[in-house]
Structure formats: C-alpha cells, structure tokens
Length: 138
Image (cartoon, rainbow, N blue to C red; front, side, top):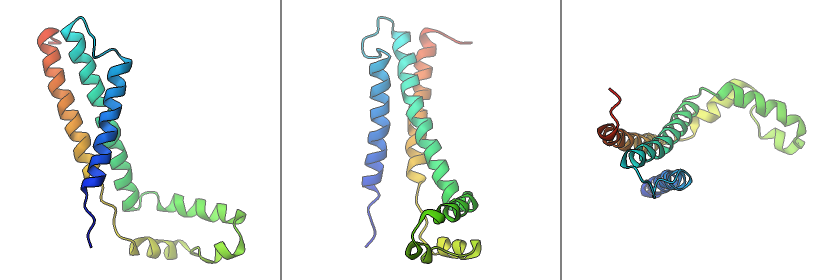
C-alpha cells in the first residue's frame, strides 16, 4: 500500500506557516503604521521559511544521492568502538558493503519540500513587488 504524501505536505506547510507567523509576531508585522513597512515585514517573513524549506530539501536530496555516504560510513566505523560486540556484527565491514546496503533502501522523496519552499519564495517576491509600490528601489 502506497503512503499518501498529504501528511508530509501538511506538516512541512505547517512548519513554514509557523515560522512565518513567528517572524511576523516578533517584528510587529500585524500592527504597522506604514504599509510599506508591513509589506517589507511580510516579504522577509515569507522568504525565511522558503529558504529554510528549500535548503533542507536540497540537503536531503544530496544525502539521498550519496554525497555524505563516506562521511557517514567513517563516523559509523569510528563510533563502533563504543558499541557492544553484538551491535558491531550488524554493521557493514567495508564501504562497498555499506553502499550495497544503502542502495537497497528505497529513495527518499523530498520534492514536496522544494515545491513548498518555492511557493513561499514566490509569495515573498509578490510581497516585494507590493513593497516596491510604496518605496521603489529603482
């Protein structure tokens, strides 16, 4: 049975919205005197969760592609000194064994993080356009 991606999408969107609301509250975005200041705050508050979600998505994509495999294997080998003999028996002996074990696992889907982050960034760009109407940069 295939899992529905809606739960992951809802959680990631909720985290983005929570970051947005937190930034709006801490910067006084809900009670501005100047509309330009309000649009600037909205733009900043939308841009931050967008970048965070996209960065996490890109890091997970890179990790799933094997970019950090050598580092993970090396740390696993170094920390195996502190494990019991029974736990060490289940660890792969060589990097080749580790890669074979890793490639047998299903791929992690992270495109939803990139899409949600991009939506936040597009909304931030729209807020920037609104801000430029009050305080033009160019």
